[in-house]
Length: 158
Image (cartoon, rainbow, N blue to C red):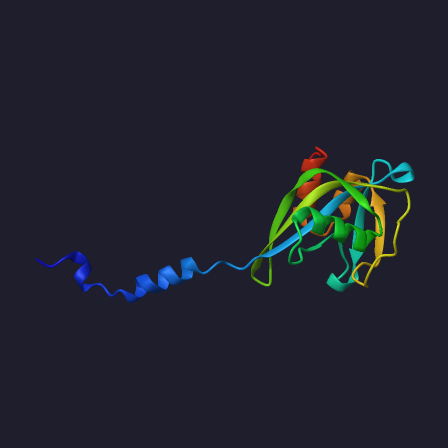
């Protein structure tokens, strides 16, 4: 008696197993919702990125080999804003595609450790840092994913 499977080619099954077994590539990044002090009390830092077409976003960047999400977030906030910060808690994540690759950005609520930047911003990726209320930031942020995160964290209406 012939089995139903005898006449089927095995090659499609092998192809499926290969594609499932190969890990999907994704971009991992981390950043911060940096809460200001003194004159910036009640405000968060947003950054202007001319390199990305004038994008306005939260400070963030790719996680380097050997870094945790938290250490990468602290490094990126320091590089992009000049502020040393202290993590208060995990805030959430955003998910979107970059050149057809999924990107996941993990954000942490952070508190600036001083009123003024402690170091000069590194590189030319960020043109300016501005302090805005969460409501103002939602109106300015380029990406809907960032706006959704800020609305959720600060319980702002849609």
